[in-house]
Each structure stands twice: as structure tokens, then as C-alpha cells.
Image (tube, rainbow, N blue to C red; front, side, top):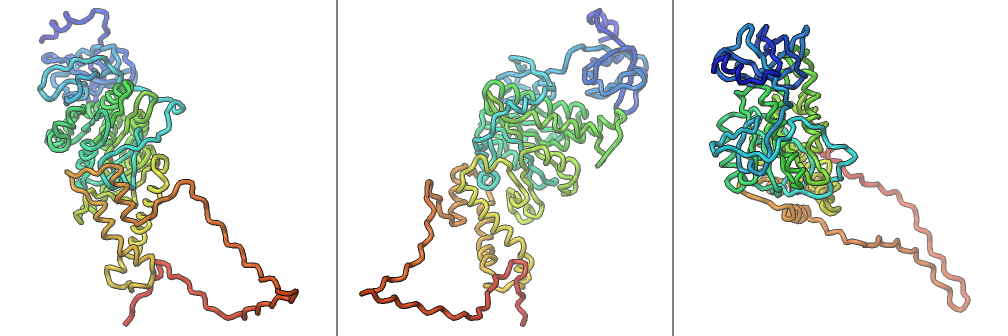
Length: 485
């Protein structure tokens, strides 16, 4: 469409500006007043209008970052103000569909008729109006259900380096978790993984109750960020309908990287890891929107790509402090063929004590104690420096490590319900069930001396002689003797 034909179709009351400069990803325009975060349209000489978002201001000019390539844009190109806040179409028709960051279908199954339009950016719920999380969520993974039990409305991160199994673990949760609706955001991932995730990980049954929001790595950084916000807005819509929603995002790191690109292009200074200050402001604004509400819940599961397997890098460190728990996947376990490669000693669910029984907590502590004890002496055992019988606790841990590892391993096609995982863990540690209302045993009363017969004085018992006894001190695991020949 020509510029003249496009202008004839526009509302004459709308305001326009002109492009004055284009540097990298940023187009600078003057003569138009638009608030930060609003969407405007850059009008090329030929072709469709290019949507762009206001990301900053400089010397009285607006800084625009486009959602697509700036083809056809030159000095003096017109800028039209859309004058509408960013919205996303929502409704039941989105179930079973794959859409882009704007809610447009990607699967070729026809148009999606929305029931409403939800704001892309929304304040998190009032913290005093959030109900307490007191109901466990069955995710179908034995290690998580038993030792890292999650609750409805909890937010947890899956942290690992590349190629360790984050997406596979996420797919198992998507298929086996008992939730009303799944909303899955694939942010900055490879294009080929989208169909694989739909067909292999979700399957027809899982896809029927899921909404996929996709923005692959070739898209604009603004579109990648928008996909994360759009998926959260869709999940909020279904939560407001009273549904228990499982929101999964792969990955938060790609979202942060996109924010870094936007911030650096807009002129923000780089900080730790090259990330701009706005990235660390966007993370809590996004993650705090998930959680439990009065009408429903959003259980958020976010993958975090750890750069160089360094779990103290900025994004992993920041998300760990915001979320309600983290599941750590390690390359050491993956190299041993231990899948899912969950290191339960480094992982934690901050709500497990609130949603599990006392017996389950005792069983979990016993199992982790065996694993931690073996971890201390693993090197000595491998080189044959530990002598069996030197420490009973270590001997027990060595005998338990094999059954524990078999318990924690699980096939991708295998599902482990919550009750079954708890029962198997209790059987594994050999714990005794706690009796409800059991009274503590009373201490034995000291035996009274026998009364004398016929008024005679009772015989005094001889006082035992003091003997020098050598007190045996148990050898701690760190002081295990080495067998020297």
C-alpha cells in the first residue's frame, strides 16, 4: 500500500511524527508525544506499518525499538501513534493452540475468536490478599514429589547449564502435573524445539489443555520479552476464572538477555554480567504475578539457563532470591546417566514443611542425611581408604546410596504419583510411622529399698566402687581412619 493510500485510511485526529535517526536497533523520532511502553507504527514508503515500542527518550526525541526489521524506513518516515495500551486476546478458544507474542495463531488452525483482551502489564496481587499455600501439587516426578514437594501457587526455578535436561524435565511436568490448564511460554528457544515440545513432551492429551506462547531466538528482543508477559497475562485470565493454572516458561534467562539488548540499545549502563539495571527491575515484576489468589492459582515453573554452570551468576542468583524454591540439575549426574539429573542436596522447596506431613518430613531428612554423609566420604570410599566398621553412620550411608539413586532415577515415560512417591520413600528409609496422639513414655521411678521385717533395720546396699572407665568416642565421618598396611 502506498503512503498516500495509507494516510487516507488513518484517523485524522491521530498524531504523527518523523524519523530523524536510526542507529542499530533504535529509531529516533520527533514531533510525536507517546508515553514509555506505548506502541506506535513506523510507516515505510512501501509495505506494511512496522510496530515499534517506546523504550526511552533523548533530547526531546522518542526512542523506538521495532518488533521487526526496519526495512523501508528512512529519514523523514512518518510515525503514527497507536494511542492504545498493549493488550493480548484471551479466551477458551486459545486452548490447544500455539500463538505468538501478540496472540496470533501460529499453527494454521484458523483464527482465534477472543472472549476478552487482557492488559500485557499488570500489577502483582496485593500481598495481604494472597491466601497461604497449603495444598500439595502432584507433578509426577518421584524426586520432586518426595523430597521437593511443590504446592499449588508456588513459584520454582529449574536451574541448569545447557544440555542437562531442563526442557525434558519441564515437559515431564507439563504432561504429568494435575492442573486445569497449562500455559507454556517458549522464549528465545530454537525453532525446531517447538514442534518437538508439542508432539513429544505434551502429546495430544496435554496439548488439549495447554496454550503455547512462542517467540523463537530469531525474533526481536521486544517480542521475546512480550511473549513472557503475554503468557503471564493469559495465565492470569484463567486464574481469574477460578482455574488452577500451571505456568511454565523456558527460559527466564532468555527473557533477561532480551531485556539486556533493549537496555543497552536505549543507552543504559551495563552492570554485573553486562545486564542493565532495568533487567533486575523486570524480573520481580514478571515473577511476582504468579501465585495463589482467592479465585484460583498460578503455579509458576521457570527454567534458568546457568551460564557456564556457575550457579552464582547474576540471573540465577536474582531469580533464586525471588522464587519459592529451586530445582538444580547438575552436569555430574547427567554424565552418569542419572535422569532427571536433580541434585536434591542443592535443591530446596521453601513450602515443603507447610504442605507435607511430619512423617514425610522425617523420611526426607533421613534420606538427605544418608546422601550428605556419603558425599563427605565419597572420595575416600572410591580410593579404598575407608575401612568398613570405622563408623556406623557412614556404613549405613554407603549401603543406602545405591537404593537411593535407583529411587531418584526415573524414565521420561514413567509417572510417579505423589502418594506413591511418599510411600516408597518411607519404605526406603525404613522409618516407623508416627502414631497420632501418642503419649511420651514416663521415666522409670527409682526402686525403693525393701522394708525391714519384724522391725529389723534394712540392710544397706554396698556402694559400688569407682572404676576408671575409658569413654569410647564415636569417630566422626571426617575423621575416618585409613587402613595402613
